[in-house]
Amino acid sequence: MDAEPNPQLTPNARKFLEETTMKSIFGIPDEALDAIMALAYQLYQVGRYSEVEVLCRGLIAADHRYWWSYSLYAAALRRLGKLAEALAELDRGLAYEPNEPKLLFMRGEIREALAHQKTTSAPTGAGVSSTPNPQIAA
Image (tube, rainbow, N blue to C red):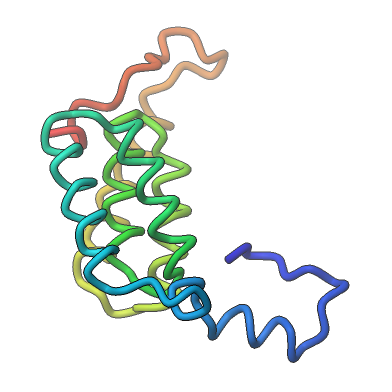
């Protein structure tokens, strides 16, 4: 769900959208989402991060309350060097599972990498690599 609620929605409509998943509205069986999660993880393992992004966005659309999809999505974004986006996805997942150890650990890693990136970057941006940070990509 978006961080900023639509001002045209009533409080009841906002609550419904927050509490109701597309999975439940369309009757998507858990087994179907499990198969997509398994495929997304396999793609992650072989380095096909762009495909993982697409599948994770679909998983989140189907069930925005499940933390695992945010975790894999953030991991793929991290491998693509999109650290700020990865951090945002972790924060979204933590909104639903605030004590999930994997999300908390990954958030700490990415925050550290972003801080390291800021301290090692030249003020003008010279020398900044567009490739993923090898410290967090491993």
